Image 1: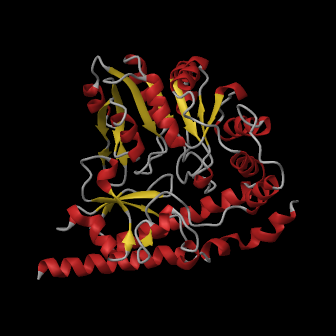
Image 2: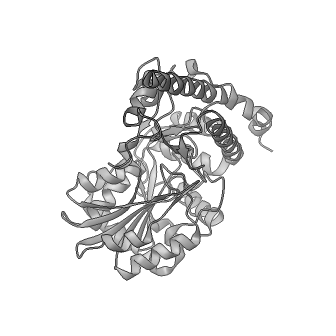
Image 3: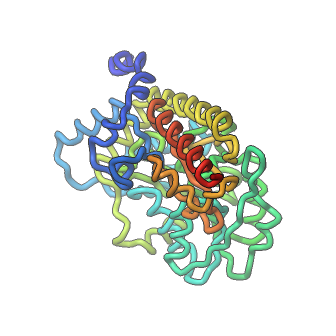
Length: 401
């Protein structure tokens, strides 16, 4: 057994618990510096935990060699590890040739839209949704055809009736986020099969962002393309290690398709503009997939416990906040519209010392919502919740005076 496993396994939860604000602020980075030095940063989708020792050591070892050009198309060992992971984890059988390595999944969203549509084409996507979905459509001159999800008592659901009403002769593409950011939905196979029927009925192509597929608490992740050979032929799947292993800063992602024509269109649309990831990214990702499984299992357990702790406190101390417990991801959307200050909720909470994401970034109709990231130590999460409760109570008293 790996000596590293023996060294840190018994204390892994303690390592996560021990993360402090001071440690988080010790390095430059977007999360803990964007909103200044006073706010607790529970916004952008980074985890605050140290990465797995195996990943650190693999990167350090790779630095001792010549940092030359990577192999074109990616290291064969890494491609094999991706193939094995998708097969073993999700039962989806692909080959090396189906994988295009890219420097992050956001670039894959833009590349897919550019490759599969023309300016003026309609692109259907569910909202609220991760902001680069909307940006990749609007900033390239395509038309957002927003399909608002239905907010229920403790969940969000796809609105299939409204979905049908969106389609126009210009509709070309469906963009799906599964697991869904920011609602935390892990769509069931039955829901995805119904969505696939919609795709076939209207002869659409699909971009499916499955970056959070490893972070599942309830249910089971189904790769959209794996539903049928027909879906495989129509779909670009986006995946990568950034969220699961806390490696966003390394810049690694994949566009995967069983249809070589779709990948060829992506390469043609982005020639010279979409570099392959660097050798350190590849070394770190290979180690993540082949050596860091114990770290991954324990971080998901820790996130699951944080999710439950967060929601217990919300229910007890902020019962007016409407929310759905996420089935996956470490992100959760909070609805403050029961409060008079809802339109300014993000600013009010920031002034109270907690930085969260503004709801309107996920769709224009989500004013009064904020997104919280609970991938942090329990002590930081509790500090943030204490401040949020205090801020809401103080603001409510002021407005009722």
